[in-house]
Image (spheres, rainbow, N blue to C red):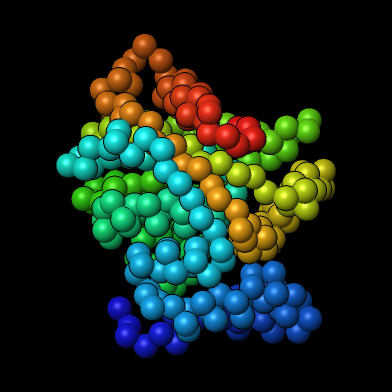
Length: 281
């Protein structure tokens, strides 16, 4: 790990690569720089006391102006390797917020699979495991990277929906949960800890997400605005609710892994009761 903080700065040109940069007009690259807030992120890195490692979770939240409170922390068993599952309403802030909570509780012993946008946040590369949400190589990523994560001694957090919540018929709706976490919980003998986080994205994000569906695009245009969504949350307080651990032995053959995943999703939605926040699942 480098001790030079400039090595952790975000450079969209390097992310895109020289071949793509030659194809894209300069105004398009500048547009992407503004959308991902490259200057603001680099300003945070240059002025942060902890500019790399888990300490940067707190630095990033402080810079953006996001706060949170935690309910149910007494449910945690600190001596166990758990698999935490959480709803996915925002696409960025939840990873930073939960990373901050885990850093306080577990130190640096946790891993979070994230989309390719967050994966390019170098200060947190030790905690983030990149997964290509829209790639055909998803199964390869799961096989090569996710398996190593589950084998490790780290606490693991996953967002089983994979994609951010969408607005359907006027209601913010969590996407169906994939069964992978149930399968991995049994395989690696990790109890599942349900978590719920409050909040939802802006009308603009939901508009572009819906537009992507109408145009039958493989890529969600709304993802270009996810960092915008993060910075737009300034001054907001989020509520995290931690439920009671569910033993991995619970997932027997009385239900399929897909059915168990749907049941855990319902449990997570139930955790939002009395959190004082609008429904987001």
